[in-house]
Structure formats: structure tokens, C-alpha cells
Length: 106
Image 1 (spheres, rainbow, N blue to C red):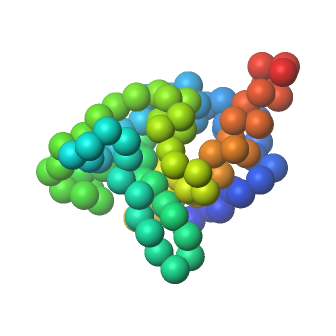
Image 2: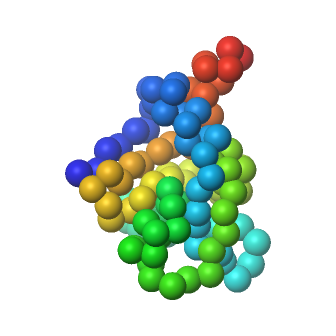
């Protein structure tokens, strides 16, 4: 069951994402892989190497904080956390950063 969060993200969840280590497929050029669909632009990120391996198999990867990952994103991309899992989550990067600022008090 996928959860979509495109605004009004709970501040604690936002902070958890931004401060956690996340894993993504490493592109050949600097940046991130962007999935272009009729529904919009998406970027996949995973909570663990095991979760990424279940979805993508053996691929080159990189790890960074959620905050650093968001800083790599092109405009208008939605982040899919753990795509294809029963806990798949869609995050709007701007809403995630804004919600985390509530936790930090500014």
C-alpha cells in the first residue's frame, strides 16, 4: 500500500527522512536517475541496500543523507521511497524540507 505525501508532511517523518542515510542507483553522470512518466517526474531512493536490491537487482549505487539527496534533485520531481514495497512512500521534496524546518524551529 503506497502512501502519497505531497504536502502537510508530519514534521517528525520529514526530519527522519532528511537525517537518514538513503541509497540510490548511481547514474553514469553526476546527479540522479529521473523517471519521466505521463504522471510526472519521479526519483527513486531506498532505505537500505537490501530494499534497493529487491527492486533493482545488482546495480551501481551511492549513499547520502536524505537532505543531500534532495539537494541533487531537478525541479518538479517527486521522491519515491522504497518503490515497489508495501511501505512505498511518495514525498514532495519542498514539503519535506518545509516540514523539517518546523522541527528545527525555523
